[in-house]
Amino acid sequence: MTRKYIDCRECPSDVKCSIVLSADTEDELMEAAVQHAMSVHQHTDSPELRAQLKTMFHDGAPPA
Image 1 (cartoon, rainbow, N blue to C red):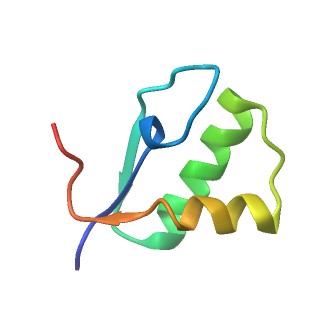
Image 2 (image 1 turned 60 degrees about the horizontal axis):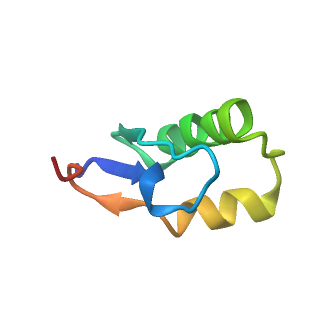
């Protein structure tokens, strides 16, 4: 099983967020990423948001 991660620094934002989230499954990572996007970046959960987030998923561990 390969871990997945998403790095918030890859998405331009006024918040200048440096959070990196990782999980063992895409479903778990998606739920964490959606919660982060809603609570920190004021996004609304939608199919479009989820599709955009999924394009930002990477395999493995985030770079240091």
